[in-house]
Amino acid sequence: MLRILLEAAGEEWTGLLSRKRDLLVLIGGPILYLVLFGFLYWQNVVNHIDTVIWDQDNTSLSRMVTDSFRDTDRFNIVGNVASQEELREALDTGKARAGIVIPRDFMKDVKKQHTSEILICIDGTNMIISNAVVSSALEVVQTLSAGVSIKTIEGSGVLPEKAQKTVLPISFRPRIWYNPTFSYSNFLLFGLLGTAIQQILLLFTSITLTREKNNRHLAHMNLAETGAYILGKSLPYVVINYANLNFILALLIFGFGLTFKGSVLLTLLLGAVFVTALVALGVFLSIVCKNELEATQTSMLIAVPSFLVSGFTWPLQAMPLPVMILARILPLTYFVNALRDIALKGVGLEVIGSSILYLAGLIVVFYPLSVVTFKRRLSKNIGAPLAGETYTG
Image (cartoon, rainbow, N blue to C red):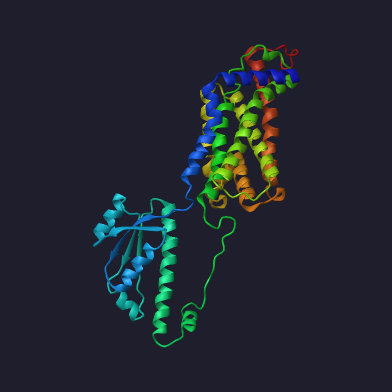
């Protein structure tokens, strides 16, 4: 069986090395994707959002509002508009992503201690930009409001310290753990790493054995020898992608500065069971699918929605029950969330142990299932008995 395993592994290695383009895609594809995404989220936060001002008051206080927005990194004041039509045109054409509207009699109402509302118009087609605008605008307006109120109270003869306590009797201070800078790199790249590896790996392993189901030499192997053969065919993909996964992870941490607080050994273990589970799944698909086209289509059908339903960006508890069940089945769900918890929270085996067990369970299920199914397919296609002679190579 060891000879069969080594011969099958050598055969697959030779085939991969002879197909230079396939080998380049297998190794270089995930690296290229993650380098691209790494540079894409290099800035970590969305700043310099193009913004226009519609100042209907044109007073010293309204200009102070404009200056307050201009002084933040989040907003890039690109111009002024003089009407609602001009404001809508700026948002429609993409000249601006946000518009700040200061109402008429703004300063007069503030001095009379009447409520005066600044309107923030936002292009909501991009939720990341709209969320950034809302949070930063709220911070600017609250700071401005407190400052104006304090000056008004001080003007009536109240001491500054007492004026501040009068204006802000209750305050709050948020403390964000694990990703305090709201870094998009920390938020997304760990998930995209698993997605890229899965996409390429399933694409290649799902066609590994599609052409071997009519091989007369293989039909005479017994179940143990069939298992050794499948393991040998799978081994190169496990080795290549496991090395690739760890190389890219090191690149993200040391090259792009992603946070990593957890255990290296635990991460290596998680990566090993994830890659092996994907290979086991891919090999099983290559056996049950009729041809390479069907295997490729099936693997993409599994891979494409995995990231969307993994709970990495949209929480599982907010998904409909059927989608949640699908997410709980797919291996990517268990890898990407566990990897992010290790990296950002520094959690241990007691937290992500169930994820590792599930991925290991997929290996235990799909590998024997592949062996039995492959043997039956060989027997059916070629007419050999289920337990035949010893494999002679």
